[in-house]
Image 1 (cartoon, rainbow, N blue to C red):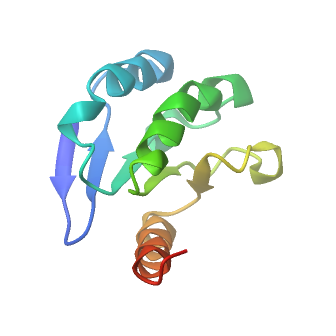
Image 2 (cartoon, rainbow, N blue to C red):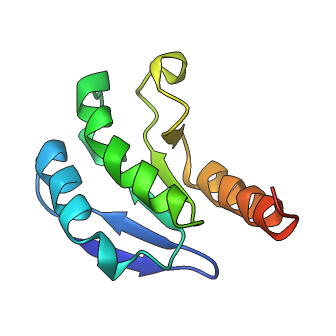
Image 3 (cartoon, helix red, strand yellow):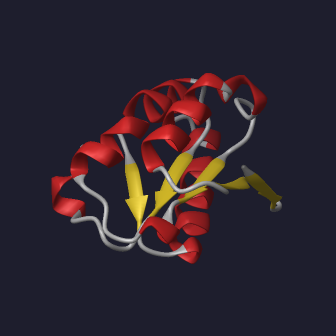
Length: 110
């Protein structure tokens, strides 16, 4: 896994070629980044199925419960089919913007 630190979040990228294994790995090692806002960059996988994306559901739910943002970047998934418990955006800039908005909401008590 490659990690890139930004001002208010970290970017996690898979170095292998299996999105399901990456989701399982992140779920098992979540304690390493539980105190950070996280962007999971899975653009390299191209077209994903909803089933593959749902492998990140538990991770997303747990991370958001801890009052931190988790955003997945992939521009091939149909956003209308994604449950609201998972934030998926098509670009890294939109991921950064969403994290900024969620931080403001948390600061305001929402």
